[in-house]
Amino acid sequence: MTNETVITVQQTARPSGFPAPAQFAFVESRLPAPGPGTALVENLVWSVDPYHREAMDDDSLWTLNAPMEGRTLGRVLDSRDPALRAGDLVLHRAGWRTHALVTRSEVRPVPDLGPGVPLTAHLSVLGGTGLSAYVGLTRIARLQPGEDLFVSAAAGGVGTAAGRFARLLGAGRLVGSAGSARKVVHLTERLGFDAAFDYHDGPVAELLAEAAPDGLDAALDGVGGDHLEAAIASLRAHGRIAWVGAVAQYHSLATPPPAPRNLFDLVAKSIRLEGFLVRDHMDAQEELYDFAVPHLRSGRLPLDTTVVAGFEGIVTAFLGMLRGENTGKMLVAREDVTGATVVTGATGMTGAAGMAGAADVAGMASASAT
Image 1 (cartoon, helix red, strand yellow):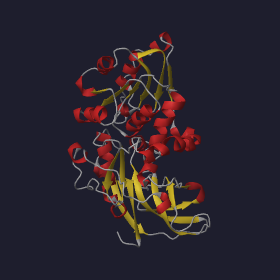
Image 2: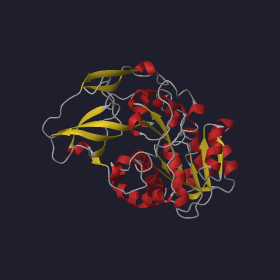
Image 3: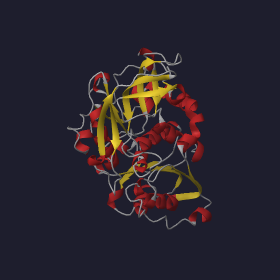
Image 4: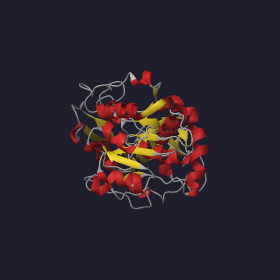
């Protein structure tokens, strides 16, 4: 890539099962010039998310052989809109590309939250990932101090944010599921979970019952299937489940896992199960800032991220996230804006062991200093 070109990632085929690198193409074209009312943004940090797997199967979300969508943080290079000035940092959804033409209505300025808030926070604990966890806990599950909580996929982006937030909200016993023994140790020794289990070790309902023998008050589930069934089984009367995702069926849409066999327990135990989309709760963004930023500054809310260096590693990062090779939120950052050691790009990221020590881009300038 040169200063005169833009690279976009395009999906070239619909996957059958787990996606493959061959279903993506890096396409180079001439760098566009902004027209009236638009601005040219150079993207700096990209988010890869579980919902992207669903988008790969949906013509209305990702069109084949066209630039793909994703949450991104970038800097305005050139603008024909006085509201967007060169140098401004903005959040937008024209990701999976090195540069994007955007309009004022398509971006949100990166707020000046003062020192102690690295740029990566805006795509992790303060972005859609953190907002999903915050909304799930406070608006849907309505977690109260002292209540016991189960978080599925607890070592992922939403799961780690939920664990951190739950502790700050005064949760009682905190139980999580993960996909490896290493991640179980990570949850209990670093993230403050009281108990955790590897869901490969047996029936999830039995593992959860062992980890929470006295039952639970609430659950934040991003897996569905047997995890949702286990949550229903372990909840006490009047428990609440915030259902935010269904990772268990993302690669098998033709034959999804069976629905929980204990759905009638929702009636028998007066349990409330509510699914939600974070886009319907954007009014909670300022509330999230008010809650999380003081804890970021004080150090009580560490950032849990796995960062891949270099845009060329975005497909590898996405597939690695789907395999569960990350701990915390998976991000991709342009190498020249990191300022901290991160995981290597596409050629160096080969598995979970290679990502275990991934660091947040803590040295990136905060919004106020950029």
